[in-house]
Length: 80
Image 1: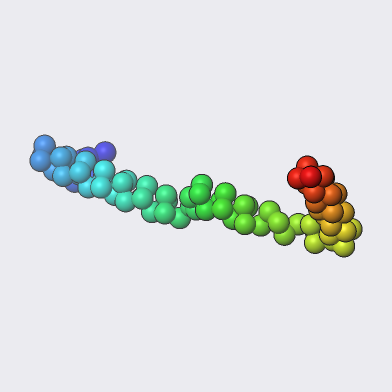
Image 2: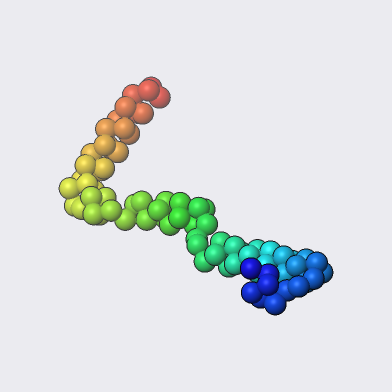
């Protein structure tokens, strides 16, 4: 391999290894930077959680109001 690249000295092989490792580390950093972090993926899902079709429907809003009324009734009984 080194002979094919024209490397014939020990110092040449050392320089080639250093250059190879540097190039490889740079490629890893670039690859890592191209992917979104886990935090970005979770936050995106978390922010969209309330935008579902069910939570925007009139039936869901009515049910939520009914539940709120029942909760208020029970809370007022507990205070007395």
